[in-house]
Image (cartoon, rainbow, N blue to C red):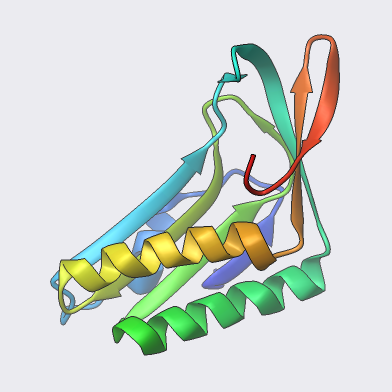
Length: 138
């Protein structure tokens, strides 16, 4: 499995952990973005993600490369799901390992924030009475 990955299949946090594990790492942090059941007190049925995959993969790799360099990480994996994602399932998983925990926490936060701003992956929330495309930062 690739470290930078987009799929319509269910994601695995353990797969991401396995990809970045290193015996020299004192810190391994995993961010999991799950699909929640409501937005602004409105019940969500599921999310539907679309992507311009070639560019999305390149942008995700750039995020990983910058994080590895900036925080001296051992490694980073970024997996994102596309298509219909049910409530409670993972939409995105970011894992990173570093000599110390502080760097891994900072790198994970940078990665998810940057991904939402720069990667061409779009999210549609589907409700019982309609649907809406959601911007990265509501």
